[in-house]
Length: 258
Image (tube, rainbow, N blue to C red; front, top):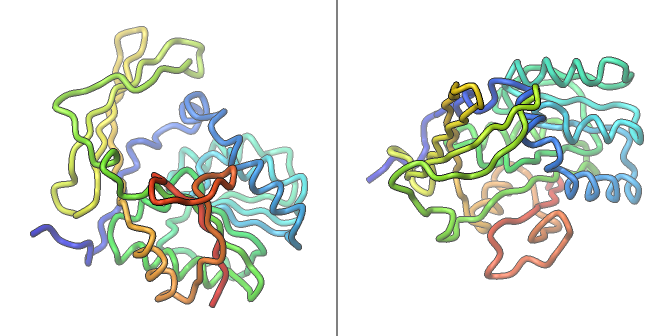
């Protein structure tokens, strides 16, 4: 039997080695998230935002124009450094290198966001609970916490025998990059996948990384939220607010303190 994540197992930082490279690959991937949050901010009394696992600030920075206090935290220094560089001319925004399972900003926020399925990066139950407790400690009675997570459906547990072509993008210098991936079950944890990634550059160089993702069920997430003083008050199949059904492969959750 595999361990259930009762010990702290930290996510690899290898996939987040370059903020500039991340933006080159994913810079246009957060349109749905931005639309969701802009709509929420316009209809709620939101003046402050905490973006947890903010990466390079792809969601954080565009939302600053409607808010008076914005903070982003991420465990990758390269991502935070690039976020600081991109937002250097913006006031009322700050980025910090911090682990979501171990941080304290000593203030509360109207809105806390966690996008990019970073919710799944907390592969041990210990770190998952610590993250939720930290989220709760930065909320007041009317705060909202919004996250997205893929669900444990069969297609998310498919494995490959070798590297398969995933995608391509232009590097920060404008060169073609081909991305290949190899998917396998995590050797230690149930319902967890290990994704090896290989990037091939035009000059023949390669960059190898990996990322681990935990797939918790909807019911398990609800229970763990409640154990940590949080309640799910809205949920959707995606950022477009499509209804969640039995065939949904992911969901977006809106959470309030209990």
